[in-house]
Image 1 (cartoon, rainbow, N blue to C red):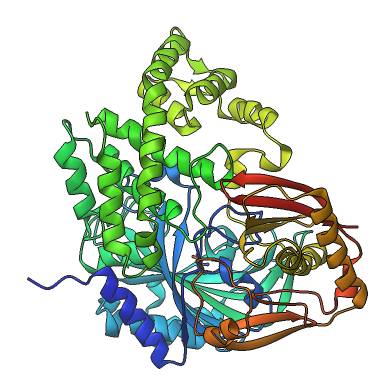
Image 2 (image 1 turned 120 degrees about the vertical axis):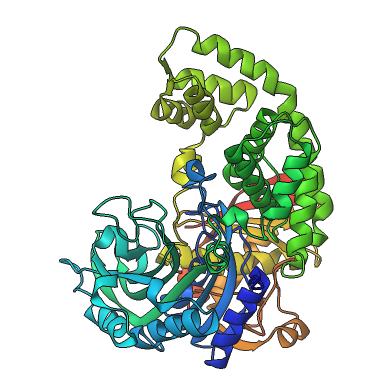
Length: 585
Ligand code: SER
């Protein structure tokens, strides 16, 4: 029997192929983004690279390749079918204003057919059909033709299918998607790549990012033409090894085995949901910027994943203890590639156990309440769903699922309405948070970003030289900065910090960027993010000789652009972690 290609082999073959073609290999950014209030998780390889797609120079050059951890919860309802996962790894190659369509497509084809050995006869591609904003992508189509893909396997599709948007605004462009024909019969006469019936497996997307979508929905040409490609590791492993589903691959078999060993019943979908969700939860907890389950933001997504997995485990007759076993297996599989997982194993297991105990305490009572609420009804109201959420911690999709098992509907928008009423505006609807988006690079945010560096250094000078950044989140209105410290700051300390920052602003310090190795940056005493993994080369931003910090940018040119810095709040967010909110007036 032919030896199967493993995920590790796929990743290293890919990186090697692009290294040979002049690409620098960069590490995966953490799953939880920095400075980005518009998205909770990195959901595509391009997210952490957005500043560079917009024109910031990357310290490693113009050709990059990476394996990026990604999480998508938008399709959470589809998890359990053959292809959808919440957590996945995406491998990609990048051109930042360097090569474009011809090279990108040719290399994709070469990698698939020559390195991975895909049968060229099974490759189908889609190409952008053109509309009022951008012309039909003949260049891409002609490149495919020149490689031997016949017209009959090139499909021209509209924006909905063949345009990659990274968020409402920002870098975007037409793409060409590569599908493998599984050999299944067509589902109908209109069956084509992207129809979702399972005949065509999408494995790789090449995006030609040469546009920027503005706030008013216009498409402007970017200063540089970029290539962003993304190949899903799990899907590729499945197709190359002739598997029907991602769950039939080496990445899931050991996890599924663990579930089956403790299950009293068998249900394929429940098994898949459990392994997918706990795998994702392990990566969120074990991230460099990992969080614990909570009722807001990333912590809430994490809670939903864990609780949904627990409920499905119960459906299979599993009592307790499975979650930890699964997490240990996931950590074992991935800790070579992500050593942070092994370092955080204690935290991962502790939080899974804590969440399981918390949820099991209320699950039975909640289920009884659900029975009561759903008696003699066709539709659960938003208020009912909210009661189940608030009093028993039932994530909305769990209520929807319970209801559909009984043939009932749930008023989800009514639930969202209730939820909104109970949350701060900025934490509005949980649904909205699941949509991908990107760091905003407005002038106001850029200023606050530079102010964040000043604040970081001022805290170290005024309060304690041991202070390190633990998190940062910037919107055009305010900055939010988390750092390690064991007590509340005094009024005097806060005033001194504020004054020191304002002094630097008044001095009109120039902001300058230098590229160097991580070791050189460390030797210079540049601030780095706790636990973060950096590439061979890093950008260091210097603000006069007041502050130096490893950072991707962007920043203002001179501190005098900032105005007046004001701290509006200082509070505790977790044991040993403080948070400052500040504004520029
Ligand atoms: N950004 C594109 C995607 O996520 C290609 O990497 O599919």
